[in-house]
Amino acid sequence: MNVAERMGRLGTESAFEVLARAKALERQGKEVVHLEIGEPDFDTPAHIKEAAKRALDANATHYGPSAGLPELREAIAKHTAETRGVPVSPEQVVVTPGAKPIMFFTIMALVDRGDEVIYPNPGFPIYESVINFVGGVPVPIPLREESDFGFDLDLFERRLSPKTKLIIVNSPENPTGGVLDRAQIERIARLAREREIPVLTDEIYRQFLYDGEFVSFYAQPGMHQRSILLDGFSKSYAMTGWRLGYGVMPAELAEHVTRLMVNSNSCTASFVQLAGVAALQGDHEPVRKMVAEFKRRRDLLVDGLNKLPGVTCKRPRGAFYVFPNITGSKRKSSEVAERLLQEAGVAVLSGTAFGAHGEGYLRISYANSEANLTKALQRMRPVFEAFAR
Image (cartoon, rainbow, N blue to C red; front, side, top):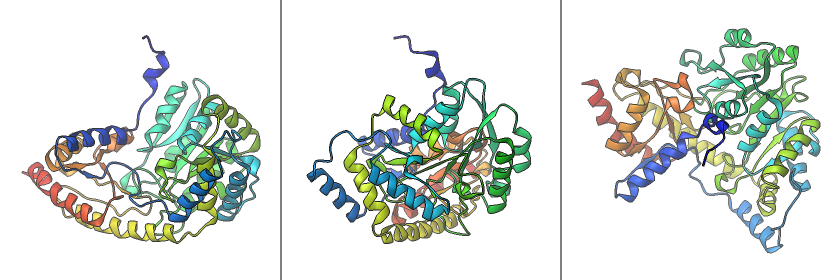
């Protein structure tokens, strides 16, 4: 078949490609330590699963409203108001199967061909992919190690133009684990307000913060009227396979995003949404325990990586990824990642999977047990020692 030209502009998410290759190696009998996929290795808390079972028994298996069940939209509005300190109504909430559709729908709704979109690089690869897909112009802001992977705000201001139609921010950040501080958030918000540019703020890793304070972009003065807050249940509640996310945005934009839901997914599964209500309203102790465990794993992995030849690694403040500098290996990131998979049985991602400015780095997820992280570090050493010879 002759596919549409636009398909050539659509990228992918390398984590799933590497996962598939690692699984193929496992089918051949090779043991692989999986540090490539951004998925908590914890089970969904019991009270959430029980709520889904009750919903299924109550036959919550039919179509629901495209924007989401009223009870979940109300719960999300209340949760957002409490955690960000701004008023939110259910009419501002759109529930989607996973959080990715909020990225896709926001960019589709706001960006025309030739419009510019500012976004972090290295950053979640779907940002750039969808900007290209709709014919927009990606305008990357490099996240540099020397500034703890924060925005270069002077460069950001210079790259703003009359063609800038959307700004994307992500904090805590994938892949670096960087966290934008209050001064950075406030300056970005001020410039967005002055130039009346909407902002997509990806706060999916909000609860995975280990040091310092979390500053929500959505909570900045005057920004909830021109921002799209992206959040969801996959990370915080270990619900990746449930596919449940949401966006909070001005009500007039929510109407357009809801029409995109009508034209694509129809609605999100009703019993999954009722489990989401239980997640927001139920016991949050499992979340706190999971975050505490991730902090211990972070420290184990960072300390171990810094002992490998040719590797240096900053201690990230958020998310559940480290982004070690491997320039000391004198190899391309993609080669290092491939050698680690094939020779050491350790699946990681090249930094370039997250954009050109990720060269010289790897992204390693510590969503795995301490025993497996220790095993991975042991297996990685001979590979890096070989590079150093």
